[in-house]
Length: 375
Image (cartoon, rainbow, N blue to C red; front, side, top):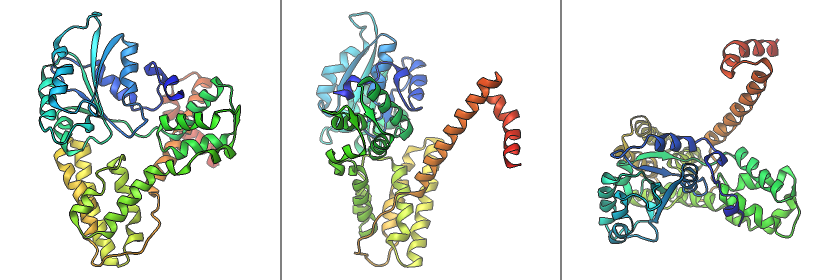
């Protein structure tokens, strides 16, 4: 499988900038420090980065998958004793607890057991989770250094897919790689799997090859969000609205922008729209405090205002079906990121020609270049 074949073996093989946050954190880890929690959607390298770092530094990885070993007794049996023992190979160790949000809801001691273990470990512990705000693992989130991996930029996915095509001697056109990278929505693993599927028996792929793919799977994330939006905008139940986002493998801020974009489409009366935006603005205030001050206990108010607050803003129940729009804010950020990336590439090229730093180009040369262009 290409997803396994091209899995990064070293940190330098990774795409995306979030990886370096993890490297800086684990390089300075000492006994007594908090464990590291990596969260993010599927396919962004949460698990692979641990193995790549361990490979670069000749460390043993002791892994337990919380979805498979879900009880406190299993956890203690597998990793409890080894957290304070040296490796038989005399290497260092990293403990990887994958999919921590897969812990059993019934065994409330499982989370408590982890909290006890991490306080006494002589080796770094790394948790991974799709949703770090699952109620059952919030104590672990509070007791960890949280690093959030975002979706991998479309441009980085395209570069990676081109590298695979070159290695596998596959001819391609830009349109097909653009389509795959856009449809997979930041999931590099999914993009590699799709590329492999349409390349079976073909040395040349084009946009016509997409007919061989079930396009419904591409829209899976989008549809999940749309299903949740339907509940939020149509229900009058605070509980139903609050629960609508529980099973979405998406960033909470992204859900926020979906709601913000579609309030005018979902509600008709001006006063309802105004009240919905008022509650959403309050939610944004709580999110800002969470992000700036790490006050995670306030996250519940952000979620309540974003979901139930918007739901109860309407005076009547709307039953008509509407087409939910993709958030303009996310489009703007994506375009802005592309512009910054293109500008940095140009500055880097000028820097090499003038034999000076990129910082000097920005400070001293760029203003004159801009003036020359406008003139």
